Image (cartoon, rainbow, N blue to C red; front, side, top):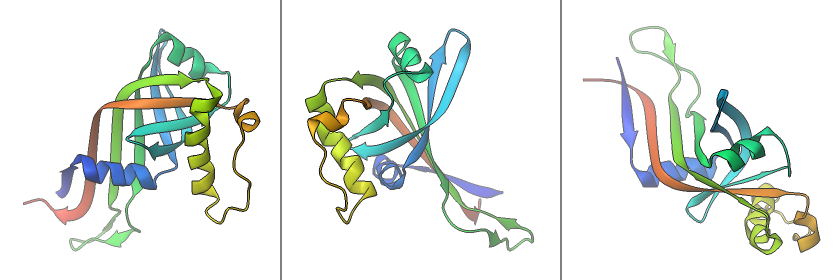
Length: 156
C-alpha cells in the first residue's frame, strides 16, 4: 500500500502559492455546488477574482462557508517496483469563510498581485482603480487548512 502523508501548514501554503486554479465548494439549498476558480495565495488567505454576478455570488451571499481544493500530480507517471505504475500527487483543502470585496481600493492590491504573477515581465501596465470596477474579489479567510501527499513510497 502507498504512503499517504499528512502535511503541515507551511507545506500547504507552498502548494497553494504554486497553484492557479482551484475548486471552490459552496452550500446551496439544493445541495453542494463546486466551481473552478482562478486564485492566488496572498497574505495568508485565498484571493479569487471573478465576474460581478452569477450563481457563485448568489451562493456566497446566502452562506459564506466555503472549501477550496487545490493540488494535482506532483510528478510524472513512474514505474512501480511491484509492477505497474503510479503517479505521486498532492492536495490541499482550505476551509473558511468567504468575503465579497466590492471596494475598489481594497481590490486593487490583490488584483495587482494576480497581474504580476501572470505577467512577471511587466508587459501590461499596473492596474488603475477604473480597471477593477468590473471585477469582483473574493477573500477566503482560512479557519483550517489540511494537506496530503501520496509519495509513491511503500507504507510500512
